[in-house]
Image 1 (cartoon, helix red, strand yellow):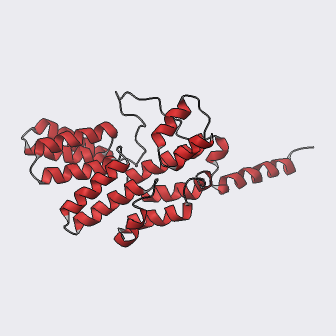
Image 2 (cartoon, helix red, strand yellow):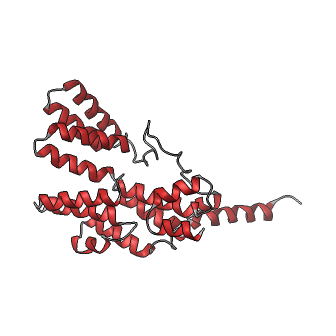
Length: 245
């Protein structure tokens, strides 16, 4: 079990998940929280990531420094380059750190450095569809429309409900004069943007991979917010004190 938990600690989530799914004993609850954290970071839903750390940080404290992770997310959100670089080698946060650094660099006009940062994000996390979308955007801006289309389609295999990829794929098809495809993807992106952010499916449709782990932890894990736990205690005490003799 300790060997498998070390795999989790090193950030090799897919290996750990596969081993747990084949019956090896390991910290499935901690891994589930880390996978959820990664999902929210990929989506750039930093508020949800911070909330998860508040509620379930105790389940992953053995793998990462929770206060440090909160500080990292704050740095990503504020695009503080000086602080972001502190997390470029972190096994759990490095992919998002590189993706955030890429955005800072591209906004500063450093396109080559931005591309390298997005590529590093994908090296650390091949499923980081937002970093891949940013690379596709740069490819489209460079006039390589067919290659950009191919990259956006790869993004949608990773997350079929990523609104920005649909919208930008529609723009790429419009450049090629393929209006029907353009309209479809732009409308699809608009509909998805109007929906609340949700975690993408663990495995893209048609992909060959093991079944996903459950999205949530056992019952007590859901009471990561201590408020719910105390509410339950109060209700039980009230019932005991007021039941008929």
